[in-house]
Image (cartoon, rainbow, N blue to C red; front, side):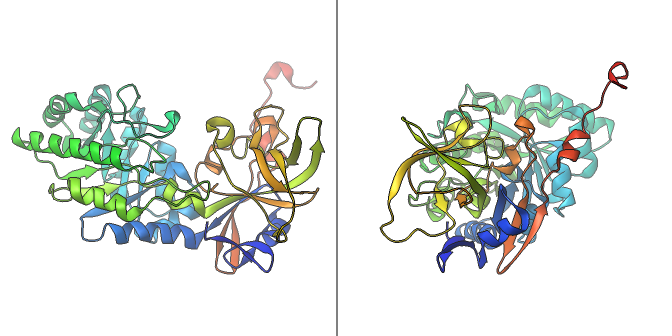
Length: 422
């Protein structure tokens, strides 16, 4: 979390004190570091230098327009998984040719829009989708570059809810069926098979599963070429995990070494789709303490951020470091505490059993490693407006999504005729 450091006793993002942001936009609020995102993207570019490789930022991690544009300015393409993300990528300035459209359940309408726009590659995940895309492409008299997403049945050794490369997962085509379906794609009208894609999971910190999966893909490519197919591209899916608990972060150079040793000489243009490792540690959720509640069993630090703002701890039992914005004095006492939100759910716990400073009402608190899968997974549960997002660059900051108002929430609803006038 080099982007967030204490300066003169106060936690800052770059050169901007978080208290200054809280005073301007209130809490809860997401705060992101431009420099951290750019540095993460450049680490991948340096590590993979010398290979023919495209870096496509995975929008699902954080799809704010300013975040996407920051990375697009660095040369990143986009990996999208819905028509909405496709629209966001375009609005942020990513050229259609630099967009890869992934996802297990693309509708015909989404496929048609992608074909009309001329996206660079559509990753097909099933035989029915292959047939649907052919129908759409032929109807639009287009030839669409297609990659088959292959499921190599490799355990990524990550959380069960974010592993995607095992045979029991909903994603991709079983590797055993890939030759049959690749041949089928080559015969279907409107399709131009260009390669193979995979994605075995998120938050991967042990690279041996990547070695196994990439080796299997290299073997598959050789078999497909032996059968007479041209294989131009190989999409390797997501990047590396991040450090959540102050552990040593995964080594991107080690990841790149696995790529080089397994598929570096396969004769394909490569693609990777990092998301979490680009933005995860570039962001925090900034919250305020409402009050501290001591019971016979526990101490609860009740803050104004909640599971609707950051659902990862409730959904995945995820760990996020908790740092006070005001730096504690050396040797200051700490007490075991639970950091909880105001949501009417027992599961609204942001951190449990942590040794934390003696917080008081009004204190500012940063929930770290919240730049990925934070704001994008937020909801308005308990009629809580969506929190704002703030981007920092050097000593300046800007609101890149303003706080949702209650009026904006209410206007989405309407009364049927029989309930009006009461």
